[in-house]
Length: 365
Ligand SMILES: Cc1ncc(COP(=O)(O)O)c(C=O)c1O
Image 1 (cartoon, rainbow, N blue to C red):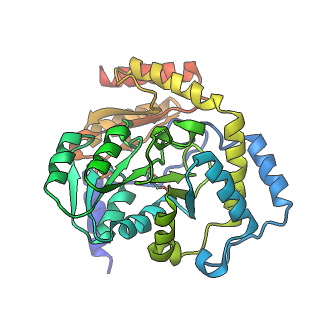
Image 2 (image 1 turned 90 degrees about the vertical axis):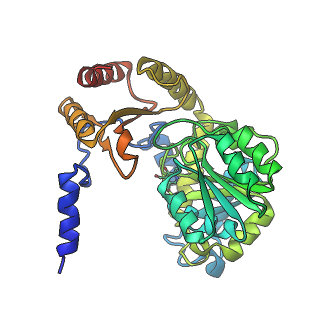
């Protein structure tokens, strides 16, 4: 009955691509997206507790379109709008869910142009749209423009702000200009930049002047140490999404419990903006030490080429108490498997130095 599944799993083991859900225990975490070390923040906890006392409903109990928003949804939206400074926002239970619904809705009658390094949730949203699409080479705006020139239909460009695997930034200013030049919307996934970069730490699009044609995704599961997501956009786009975005319409609205967590986290983020600043400095220094592009990105991808080598170095690190799983195909290409180090606000210099030594010892770079 299960032969085909078992065959697949055996094959994965043979190719060193088999995966299991890891057990964290007490290993040093250089893997999670808790960039600002907020996931254990006592003040966020006590903010949540005091909000909980206000008789927060334990469930949304239905799609927002059917049952409406609770007071806490409205408060969270107000707080988020203040943070993001865009005229319209829409909440989702996860970033994946948002991308799966928002992209097909936006694509409507458009041709899509997607960066080749885009996250799986963006790829899946694009596939679900059933619209024609072009993949442009990673961050290659000449390639993108060549592809766009050939299409006369309305367009939609899809990119990330800070790429989740390679840890490099997209050129948002040029992408925005290209979008305006070719009658295109621009969708920017700010999952990894929200809380770390931009005005109020609300993501990099905040630094652009013209934004009406830009739609952004902001997730809670990374620097904001919660979960769920908000889309930020122009009012007409929000209106359109409320009427057409299937993952919004046909899903229970995010829990009010999640909404109070966003309210609490955004409050502390504002008070403790220094966390992002310190992390950026740490990133710059560590990236230099690893001979990576000297940026403020806390995502460091160390390419080790093969899955076998990546697993070997990951295991060596585990013996020294570091939790850094190998990043393998199909998450990255077969030629570019390796380790992804995620720096956190609370990593110490000693921890980073030792990590560097172990990796260098095993990779000779
Ligand atoms: C770039 C990017 N977009 C979207 C998502 C999905 O967000 P969520 O974890 O909230 O579903 C992720 C999460 O891994 C991501 O890295």
